[in-house]
Each structure stands twice: as C-alpha cells, then as structure tokens.
Length: 120
Image (cartoon, rainbow, N blue to C red; front, side, top):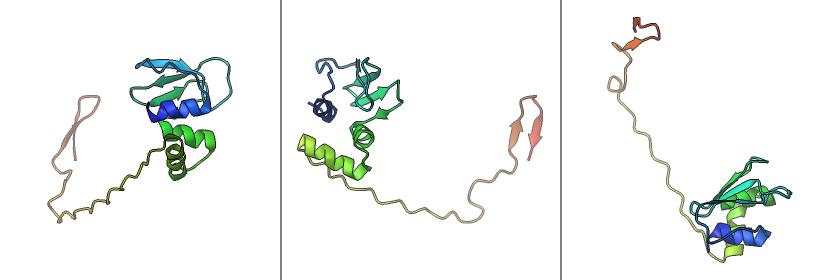
C-alpha cells in the first residue's frame, strides 16, 4: 500500500485500490458530494478539477492540514510509520568563465518573421 493510499484511508476517501490507472474520487481538500478529483495510484498523484488543488502526498497534507513541507513530511511519517530522511544536495559552485571565452552575440544572424536578415 502506497503512502497516498494510506493517507486517503486516513481521511476517509473511498477509492478502488486495485485500479492502477486514473480514477475519480471525492476531493479530500474541500467538501463535495460528487467526485471531481482524479487519482493516479501509479504516479501517486491527485488533481481536483473543482478547487484546483493537486499534487503529491505532501501537497495533500499541506493543503488539508495547513502545514509547511517539513511538518507535512513528519505528518505522513506518523501515518505511514516510515521515515523519510533525505539528504539535501549541496549547491554547486558556479565556475567563472574567463573574459572572452564565454558566449558572445557577435556575428549572429537572426531571421525575422518578414524574412529580412538582421545582423547584430
């Protein structure tokens, strides 16, 4: 059972767990009587056409509970019982390009929509 399935069970949203393609569900974010949201269990994504809410498990928790991302991760961990520890990637250092070795726009030819050659 995926995290999204467990979370939808937690919120009481009915869905067919045996289907692997998209299916219609009642939106877990806003109150409604008809199914206006679609659910894709293969990709673990959902989308509501009525209110515009969409996303992953964490987006659902952030919208439903009004939490920030870090708190939403902890909330999902509490429901699923699995830790989501992920290391953050270190930012890459930008390489300095020596003057004269980078991209220059000299001697480029642009063709306008009227088929005239414009040189710059």
